[in-house]
Every structure is written in C-alpha cells, then in structure tokens.
Length: 172
Image 1 (cartoon, rainbow, N blue to C red):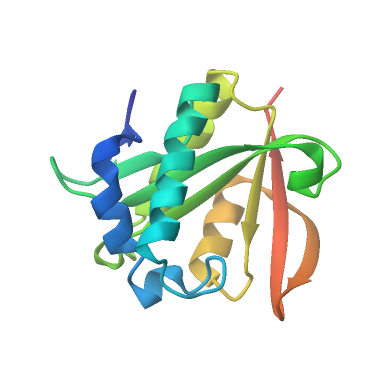
Image 2 (tube, helix red, strand yellow):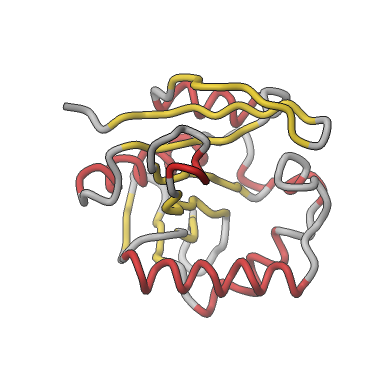
C-alpha cells in the first residue's frame, strides 16, 4: 500500500524496514520523547518490527515508512489498534504516532505525513477515533497534534514525565 503527498511517499511497513528503524531508534534526539527516552536495543527494535508486521497481517494497516526521495527512509507514521483499556479512553481507538529523522525536522514532514495517514485511516474505515499520546515538552509533536485537529482528552504522569492523550473523531 502506498500513500503519496506533494513531497512524500508513505509505504506499508515491510521486512526491509528493520535496519532503517533500528538506525532511527539509535538517535538520542529521536527517541527522547518515546518510551523511556533511551535508544532502543536491537532486540526491542526487532520485537516492535515483528509486532508491526503482525498488526498489518491482522488488521490491514499499521506503520508506514516515510520517504522524501526514492529509496530514502525519513521516518515513520504509525497506526496501532488499541482496546478501550489500552487507549485509556474507555473506548477503542487507533493510536497514531510519528517519528521523523532529524534530517527532515523543520520541513513540515510530520504534519504532511500524519495528515495523509489520518485521512486514509478515516477514508478506509480503519478508525472512527484516533488517539495521539505525546509529551507537551515535545513542542513540534504538540504542534502536529494541534494542526491535525486533535483535542486534548487527558493528562497523566508516567515515570515522572507528563503525557497527554488527545483524540480526533472521524468527521461526520
């Protein structure tokens, strides 16, 4: 599956994405606001990669590799189905996340890529509700959440870090 925008191509996740994901997950500036904030081990990255492939097989959607040029790997936009309990909303949702490689920061790639995936998720009936979990200290991600039209639902403390959950309902 392919999603294209004016400047980007988003490819369905594949076996070929592992090395690029591992390289991205090694950059301290990239993982600063993800999970523990520490670079991912090879084993953890492989587990995430395999879970992503399994999610695609089960649900027909999942993570997308972002490319700004043919053959490049410039980031990830993820969609992951969450139960009512996992979402923290009391209702099922599809969690949306994104990582853009530092070489693409400040170019609007995150907003462009996530808007395209948001639109596809609603058009393809993958989701009625999208969830974004982010740290307010991550100002660029907070701006993407705002630009996409998400509404802050709740705030919580996780391992001493403030995180927010924001939701976006399918347009009527």
